[in-house]
Length: 331
Length: 288
Image (tube, rainbow over all chains, first blue to last red; front, side, top):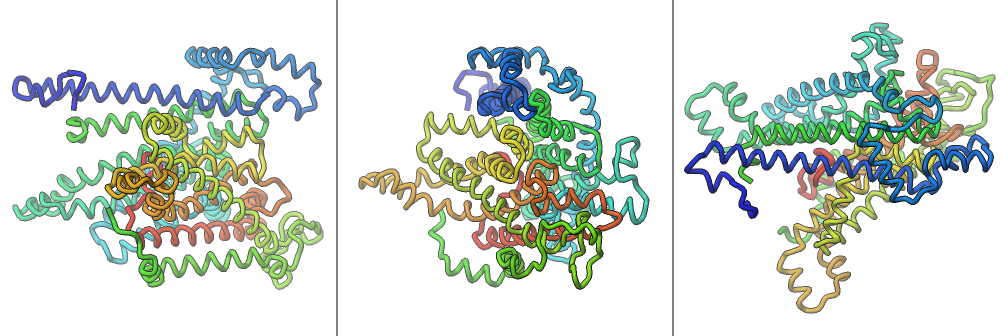
């Protein structure tokens, strides 16, 4: 309940119901935006702690492996601004981030932002395509499983779900390549030149991502179908499809929406493995290569970008939920 | 508030559950084979005999040989030790600090709790695998750092859920009563709160082991976990990847090994969850 005296639906319900409703929603949206802003600051800080503070001396970590002299290390330290006090480093780091300056790669000396944004479209393409497949399979199989609960279809869906969460991406990916590229020769095994290159990675990531969604949609729909208002809808003679589509699904899908936001994290992490399996260009490859080469500015930039995408996706999901679910607005 | 568990009854339910029986048998078998590696594997997992390159499965080599003529079956068996141990270490690193922190944070409450939860929120803003990758980039590639990274990356999620479970009993009358009669906080936490949180911890720990095995395999596959010539399952898949057309058995056998292990662990976890009457907790990995 509002403590700060902001107009809410309870106070303005009679005079101007609509306005009260909207401003309550606005407060909620602004609050979510502020939380997302803090989350962005949080990941920036955590990355700073992990990559700059914990290793002790990043310059030494990076250069010692290549057998650089003490003087070269000292010089690199000065170049990277590591000889200054931590708070100063932290302040400069945040300031650079705010300006969109992610530094330069230690190897190619190109701006990190450029390196990342070149590769980003490939990853986004893969993530979006697999998200579509995740939603289609998750909703479809989950609904069918709930409607025919206890039947062989239901049991099959449960089996697919548990197989999906148990099979490592890198193994099922290799199986797909073996079958569709080497044996059947239908699809190319690697690269990202056409839609044919996208089919296997997207289907793979999409199917694995769908596994938890199948379970969630099934259990929610089962609970919803027992609700009183469904009985009412049925008893007034609505056709079963309408009952399902117009009444049951609406409520059953809200938690699913939330899960899709969380699955975005899985998909973003999964692209790293998938891109390696199918030798696709993308952010994931950039991160892995940068870690192997100890190219910390690139690791830092790519990690920050992926985490920011994750936060923005979840922000979007929250905002959509606020729009769709009246209960969220009243709170 | 549910009454305390009657463990013999839980055991009865579990024994009747086919998922528990199947998962348990398979997992026991895998652990047994890995433990008995010197007696089950007839070749060295690392000794290379290039003359025997890419031999298909046969009597001498039940799962064939790889590029360097190493026996794939022996490598998978010995690799089981590495993969299972790394998975167990990572899961322990997630579960132990995660539960203790969650218990502590939920019990103490107040500013300490808010501070801890803000830190946890920061870590939860990362996809788990990405957080693990970031930690590996600090520690450097290797199986130990992969296990450490996967363990640490999972801990925040665990802390959140255990804290939520702690909060659900934190303000119960019997806790209040225990405090009133002068029970010290440590005793309240361990004797009165922990048993209620135990269900959640057991179920989540079993699922966590599955995630850990998958993520460590993934890191090794990416070249950031176990390093050659170690016979680790994820690494074996990378090594066999280039010869998928010539010698599919190099990838097929370790791939099946990981899948079977994780499947068994997940079946056990699902059966446990149902037997303990918990909600499906693996739905998403954010707020608990």
